[in-house]
Structure formats: C-alpha cells, structure tokens
Length: 131
Length: 343
Image (cartoon, rainbow over all chains, first blue to last red):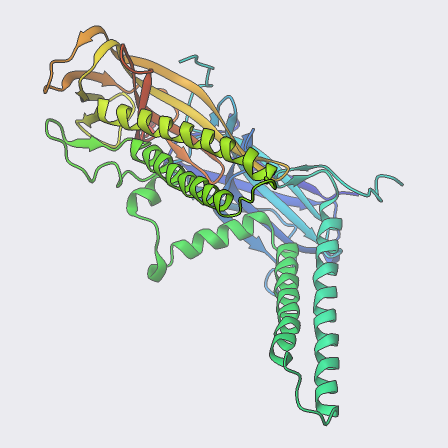
C-alpha cells in the first residue's frame, strides 16, 4: 500500500504574488516508521511542454529520523518568501508550474511523490499570434 | 510479464518509457563490470610482469594506462550512478543552487538573485547610444554569414585546384582516369556556385548598411513607456519598413540523437510602419517612435531548455534586395508586486 502524503497550503485559492510568504504543512501517513528512510519537502518550479524539463528549487528541506525527532511522519510545516520570478505561465509550447512537493523515501529504495500546485503572479494565458 | 521484461523502451529526450530503477541498476551493473574487468586485467598483467625474468614489454606503459583507464572510468561511473540513485532531483537542484551562492564562488549578481531565471542585460547595456541611452546589439551579425561564405570558397578552391593538378600529373595517354574526369567538372560547378554566393553576400553586405537601434532605458518593465531611435544606412529604396515588439516561446528538445528547437510567437505589436521611402545618398534613414510594454505579459525567461524571448524586430522590403530582417533582443522584467490591501 502506498503511503498517504498530505500537503496543505495556507490559501485555499492557491494564488500568490511575488514577495509574499507561503505557508505549507505536510504529513505522511499509512506507512510504518521503520519503513521510512527520509521525507523531503521542496518548493519548486518546473517547465512542461514541448521542450525538455527545466526545474528550479526555491526551498528545500530533508527530514531523516534522529534521536530528538524519531517520527518523521508527523505534521511538519515551513514558510518561505516567494521569489520575483519565474512567474506561473501557461504558454503554447511552454508552461511554468509552481508547486510544493513532498517526496517520501522508503527503506526498500522506492520513492513516492505528491505535488500541490499553486500560482505565482497572474500572467494571462498566452495566445498564438501570427506575425 | 512483458511489462517487466521489455527488451527496449522508447526514449523522448531525457524521458524514457521503461522503468527508471531498472535502467539505473543496468547502468550500475555495467560500470561494476568495467571496474572488475580493469581490476582483474591489471592484477594479472602486474603478476605476469613480476613473475617473468625477461625485460619489460615495450608496450608496458600503454597496456598499464589502458587498464588503469578502465578502472578509473568504471569507478567514476559507478560512484556517479550510485549518487544519482540516492539523491532526488530536487535535492540535487537545491545543492547546485546553494553552491552558486557561496561567497567565494558567487556567480549570480543581485539582479539575478532578485529575479531568478530572468536573463541578465549587461550585454545589452554596455554600448551607449548617440540619441538615446543604449544602443542595442543585433542578434545575428552578417559578418558570420560572410565569414562562412569566404571559408567555404577558399576550401573548395583548394580542393578543386588540388584535384586538377592530380588529374594533369597522373594523365597517361590512352589510360584516362574516368572517376577523376567526372569529379573535376562537379567540383568546378560547386566552386562556381561558391564564387557566385560569395559575390552575392559581398554585394548585399556592402549594399545594405548596418541597422542601429537605440532605446531610452533598459531593462523594460511592463506598463512603462520607452523611446526608440532607429537608423538604417545604405543606398536603399524601401517598399516597406516595419519595427515590431515581439515575444516568442522557445523550446529545445531531443528526438533520438538530434537536438531540435521549436519557437512560437505569442505577442506581436507593430510599432512603426513606413512605405515607399527613398533614402538619400550618404544620409541614413532615421526614425523615432515611442512604445509601451503591455501590463499583463510574461517576462523574459531563460531556462536550460526553454525560454521566453522578447525582441525588437526590423523587417525591411527593398526594391534592390531580397527582404531582410534584423532582431534586437531586449529583456522584460516581471511586473512590480502590487501591495496587498490590509483587511
């Protein structure tokens, strides 16, 4: 059975502006503690479309079990100020998508990923233009 | 069963349809085999050398080098594969980003830190204008085309002359070398075409003068107004002359072993249009205009494989020459953040 990964952003509309602070909470369930190796949380942008994927990480956090904090499944949170660019963009052959991503590493080597997309800025959808 | 034991998978650039883990294991097994082979051969070779009483082989150094190379290549590949297997894409990207921000090897300027992935404009603002603040550099220079035409012409003339000398030197009456006789006119024809092309380029280069574009400020910001000055030299009679602000998406992708590029225009605004103009001899055609960058547009973006590029393009149709187009890149910044109303 796959682990259950929950990600919650502080705004239900999931729309942010440049320079604003984003709050993110995440939690991992349905997995035994001894099966877990690490949990990574990141805030990143990636491209979609015709070209190869580009990716940039704005915030990154890696949790491994320690003596102080043995249970890395518990609810965790982070907050960060959003950068000036790149803004979310829905073009014709290129899309730029922002998301909060949680990646779970199990002891047997398998990984599970969950994304929560959000918008940065309010760039309108691009239209095809004939020059 | 076929799902797990597929002989081959489809490849779309860096994306593969086969299971990733299986590929990683295969890569690790390949490099492990390389290490093992290098190690075993090296030990065997060294034991043989120590055991024999005869003097060392003449190729001792080379043999040793090849085996050591196998060992090194295998070890580096194996370590790299294992590191790739254990580290997520996000972690790798975060580590690389952190490395560029270390004080000793800082590669990013303040503007790049404030606006990541927006291209720098230092190459666009290092040349002051005569009328306005900056003279923009053109994207493509006709000198490259000229250089390529000259290089090809010189190379081909050398090949044709060498072939002609060879045909004459080895000519024996009654024993014609048909292959060389056939090749010679073909080479001469290609040489003739290269002369024609070079002359055409030279005429064009000297006939169509340089295009200068100056701008009042840079980088550009959405909603802001800018002045533009344009100067076109050369003895020309314009049928039409257009300047436009253009935005295009560009994506690079791989198809098999080929790298391809695709572009799509998403914004085009004509800033200036003139027709039927005769340029006086010795005086360049000069125009000034103003334009505003629209408020809600995508900013310039430069990724490794994808980009959003803003350009000022000059399209000219003349009576003497084929239509030509010159492109001047500009950088558009994202709009300034709007302060949120406090509730």
